[in-house]
Amino acid sequence: MQATQTKTAEQVVSAALASTGSTWIRKQDLLAYMKSRNISKDIINAAIVIGKVVHYVNEKGDSYLTTSYFNAMEDLIAKNVMRLQYGTPCPKVEEQIIRSLVTEFEENENEGRKLHEHQVDGVIMVVNNNFSVLTGGPGTGKTTVLSAITYVLRKLNREIQIVFTAPTGKAARRISESTGEKASTLHKKLGLGYQDTEGEKFYEDVLFIDESSMNDTSLTATLSKAMMNGRKVVFIGDVNQLPSVGNGAVLRDLIASKVVPVTMLTHTFRQDNSSCLYANICNVRDGKAELKEGKDFHPIVLNDNCSDQEAMKLLQDTYAKEIAKYGRENVVVLLPYRKKGICSNALNNRLQRIANSERSGYRHYCKADDNTLFFMKHDLVMQLSNREECANGDVGEILDVSPKGILVNFNDKEVLYSLGDLDQLCLAYAMTVHKSQGSEYKSVIVCMLNCHAAMLTRNLLYTGITRAKKECTVIYQQNALTTAVATIAEASRTTMLKQKLQACYLQFKAVYGE
Image (cartoon, rainbow, N blue to C red):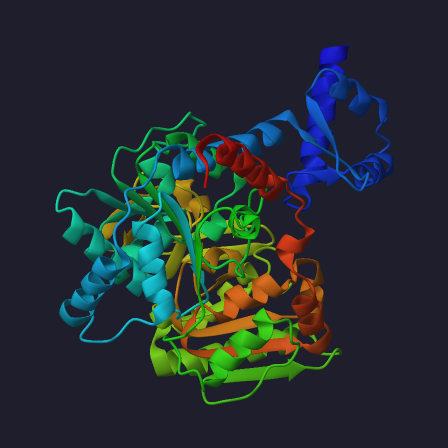
């Protein structure tokens, strides 16, 4: 009976944590969650006694609970990060030598353009530390810093082995295109397949992890076990973007702990600092519920009585205007939902008529929720799950539709889908903001309406508008904007990683000194 109760208790706590993305939950919140579902609180007490559910009381007397799994994963991350950073001293290189090599990089690899002082600080930090974090918003030159770091490290050691990774295939390709270096998904680098495995060690000298805000607690714990002493690990990302789909807020906690080296890039290069797009990115980041009109940014306010059909018509018209300017492969519509109400599935059906004039020939129909989709030659489609040939979130173009199935081109790799595989695809003229993370488009159209209220956060809006390189349009209702800007996704995530990092730091400091 006890085993059954324990399993139930772990399931209950896991479900409660999943609802917010947290790794810990306040005891009163858990009890309220259980009461609403007619679950006895006694099962929690029994699980605490045998250690399957962990109970923690802070200095203020507040009680928190988690599963033994998440408690162990956070412990693992904290111990391994401190082990890597402080367990084996990193050979120090004189700052003047690094600066001299940065100057070489500027002249030889960066067309004579000088790096901002913050960028130079980032290079120095990575060279002289085993573990570090490089963070900054869009266009702050993170890619340039990575290229400069790579240049300096290879000048210091011609034999050095450097690996570039990202959480998704899409993000990995983006960093590969921008740096000229080969890149893979973090899962592939760690040897993680579609089933849970322990993961592999990495033996290269330097590991860069781009878009690291997408890394959840479980993946980071696996990574931490793979980090060998004497190697370098660098987390790169924007803490203001959407947090990971899985539990935790790892990048936030690493920065907030103040016990690992961090360089924050603030100077923007992508957009002119006087551009309206840049100004609105800053406003959203800083929690201001106001969007300014300009040549590269177009806020369109809908009244509260606007019908779904009116909103959809406006999205269609805006999309048609933007693809006429930039081409369909350079424009995307972003929404909070894929399946609910005014969502990407429903909108894709309409945008398909605008984006793909190939109306004749063989078609394949696929039932997707309440929407019947059909795929035609030249359609842009997205892969919805990982498979050997392509990754979740990859966007490609249909080359052929035949009775045998669908042939799709993903970045010069042709993938054949049988009729039984069609549920792995959806149209990609519109997508969720979550699916867009790690991508960039010349023109982005973001839709945020009152019906999306449950999903609206500042992180979601910020991530959406920062996908735009040239131009952004936001179609919204005022209450939706106010709700989004006032709600920080990670603020609702309760974790203990920051505290555990700080505690481990004090332990290592006591043993190894400063």
